[in-house]
Image 1 (cartoon, rainbow, N blue to C red):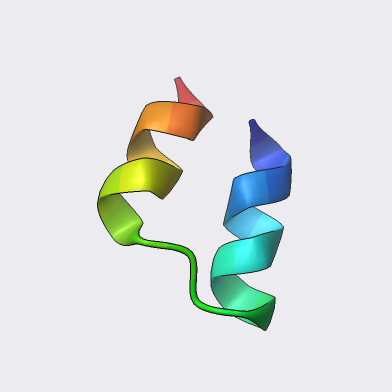
Image 2 (image 1 turned 45 degrees about the horizontal axis):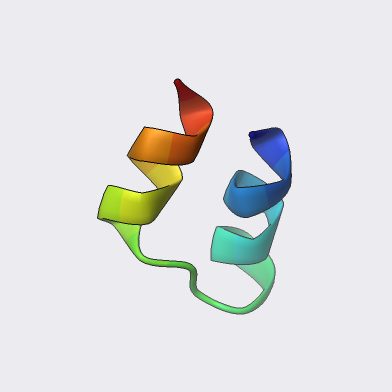
Length: 23
């Protein structure tokens, strides 16, 4: 989910989690 990507930039969501959510 793109939300995790935004959280990654804002808070620092794990890159691995970001990739899984992106799918």
